Length: 236
Ligand SMILES: Nc1ncnc2c1ncn2[C@@H]1O[C@H](COP(=O)(O)OP(=O)(O)OP(=O)(O)O)[C@@H](O)[C@H]1O
Image (cartoon, rainbow, N blue to C red; front, side, top):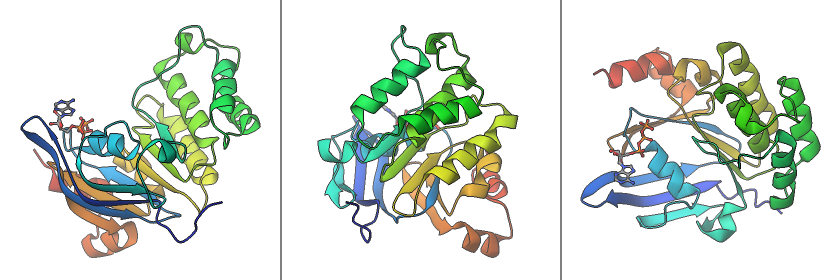
């Protein structure tokens, strides 16, 4: 059962240091359900660190992180569908093997949906993943991740290797496959391609939240696209 009134994630006073270096400083965020959230920031601003904390891959930090009201841990991993920034398949695997593996691993995974999606994207279920191009693997991983009925989807650079013609299809795939009971957090540098699907935008700067706003409010306030604003705020 999904607990409808609980935010997908709540982050309170989160600080993460690597040795003497502070990668995240006193981050506070609430990720409400039914939203697509853009997590944006220049290289090294702490996006992947935040994502790894949310997904339970980094466990030593200060502060509190809740997913569906529960502290991040073994329980919450099952609630999150995570697209990492690199692939994790064994060399021998064909696309269909990975789909069957996901079926075994995740109770909320819809294998039929995954087969349909890869077909729609022109991928071959019998092809070895190792022999796919980077863009093909990106598309395939996104199909797997969006074929789960998760509470929180965490997508780290989902379009990195995807050709411009396929990007819109991928974004529509994201839009179609998350529900009002879940939320999606997307970290990307391809802001102009992705901003049309954001409800909320977060700018991270040197480990701190410098902006967290609804996209409509932001556009009204600044009269700029998110991409334009990002380029101005983070101009080198
Ligand atoms: N394992 C680690 N050990 C030490 N420092 C680290 C480690 N991982 C990340 N950092 C540092 O923490 C900071 C934030 O890194 P992070 O990977 O979270 O940034 P990012 O915003 O995802 O960057 P990018 O856009 O380049 O992927 C960087 O200064 C990075 O060098």
